[in-house]
Picture 1 (cartoon, rainbow, N blue to C red):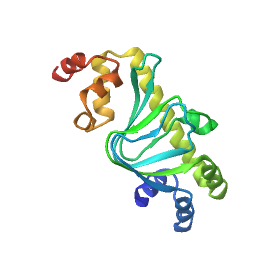
Picture 2: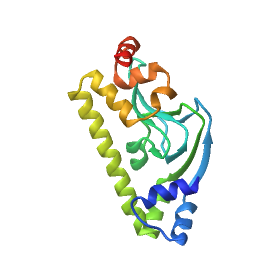
Picture 3: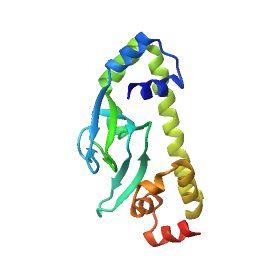
Length: 188
């Protein structure tokens, strides 16, 4: 698992073996089972998770109890409720496992300590946050300016293999359409 994290970091910054050992010492490993909720709305968020293996979803439950999927997280993705994690407040989002998952996670305190100890990590986390910001911007622009068919095509392009790994009802929730509409899109 640590090799995958190192590859992710070294896509942005090179690390010596000693630096990586220090980086790794600030992370913890945890396995989660399918259907396990790792971040629950209303609870404090202590960790940012690097998904080594598995599949997760980030969702928002509205006042009527309807689930709106904000993000899917596949292998080599970072998952948390960013606002709650960085401000150390309660979550407005929920994160749960769609498959068994292997993760490496870091607390905000360990992340800040690590950035002081290995300056390169501050650059890495900045680049990683920027990439996530850009991804969410693309999603928002797609939602407001693209047809449902274009959104579906983008989903298939951005998340290769996802369609085979999750129920159609979750794909429909992500796109904000009914299952019937999704079936028509998938067969078009």
